[in-house]
Length: 177
Image 1 (tube, rainbow, N blue to C red):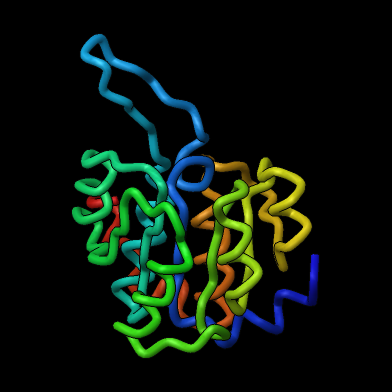
Image 2 (image 1 turned 60 degrees about the vertical axis):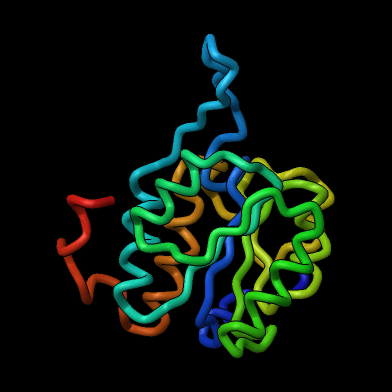
């Protein structure tokens, strides 16, 4: 880990996440028709929705192109969903410009090689416990949770607690997570 990540939590205004290996466990279920299916943790959904309800920005940048994933995220209120990103830095810079964000205001969580350039650039680089060694080496914080097992909830909750916002909307989003 590069630095004491807790000092960086106070600056965060935006959460950006990869999908496969972060919001999911990285496994793919292939249907008879060839459709790729993934599972996501409802605790991550609750945390993203709670963050949005408390004024934080949430964005997804993924190399995958699953419309079912996009539908789930849009249903949570995540409006900025970048699918099929071959160079995640392009989408990151577009997102930063759109929302007038500085690097230190962004927490990114990724787990694999395409995430490394973004992790090296953002203010707070995070990853799940089961990320590859190259990602762990550039991360400020390694979650005790694995991908698809509420690692997203882990980082959102930590930031919101530092800002005194965790539980502000207690119970209001649980049914729709």
